[in-house]
Length: 485
Image (cartoon, rainbow, N blue to C red; front, top):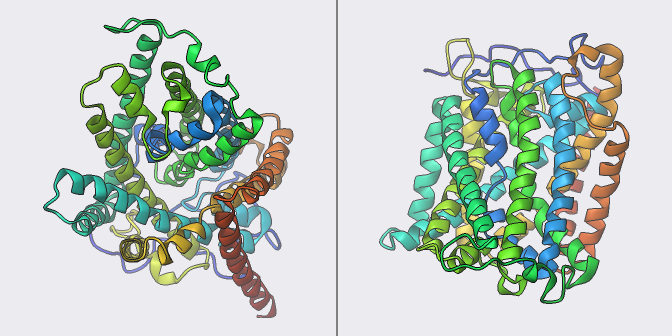
């Protein structure tokens, strides 16, 4: 394939198009103009992306920190955080099924609240993805370096970045295939872990006795640190659910976006909640919660305890795959988001070129722009991990909650507009509208306030608030200039 000389359809010019003011809102069908991107993703790609998109290192390793502060009640923490994520995904799924777009929630925010909202949430999410990409690439390189010490970590980082850049430049189906098999391995690992854990709980495995409820009620009881521990656990694990949003971005590149996103959201949210909460229940039932430590995988602890040979290396492989999966998904999501911003005149028009012969293709310049900033983030992480990059990471630490908040606010407005103008487009509906939407809107600032009371989380909130404020200021200046023009 070769780069097209121009995009296959014109972007929305500045000052027009979907916005909260001066916009006609969704058309009679509730649909957006056709995307100039290839429809290379299949339903199986999207479904597995939904299942495996958030099963990552945060679950396999980071959950140990949550157990350490909440005890067995970490199950409740995951249930609360997972329910919040599930509500956000249902809202996002409703809008994406009615109006599929490569910019997903950025496009929805622009239609519902105005250009400032689409601009702000789009650029903040892009910034979040390309910064976190550096963490994933560096962590995967450290694991690979431990396996092959002769190869320096920076060379592994370079290899990963080049491989996934080439894959994403070639065709969207490459992204889909990588994610399908990555997610399949992660889901298989979780299912096997749950099966072995249940066998251990009931004493079916060799040299094991039934565990009963001893570890759930002993060592200080189910709530060893009270409900304060549950709240701290929520703050620790809520960000592990970030990443599901890419599912709705990818839906725009399927043959039937509305149907694909509806099916994927329906199947993914419940199963992911099952995987997370089920895993935690097995972990705190098999072993005392006091055996877990922050930074150490509770999965390895459990597998070691029930006699699985080489448990540590097995989990290293799973975590390695999870990190590469997240890197691939973040590169894809960031490129599509900045491409969508360019379509709406919120990013340089040069990013609009796609590969192919006019039938749609890959936004190669958007991919290269995203990976370039990703490379820069990696270099900062390798050179100044505890200073410059730490500040950069903190500046996106709580951005996900801002994104979720705008998703909820957008759904609140677009749902009523769609009911009036295009009720047939509502193939997937938010539960108990508008009450659960309002509950979500109230819960998100509550989480931020709780983070402010936590010494470890406070820097993330403050730095993220600064980054968000800066982007909002730029959006406001653009609005003023547009009105004067």
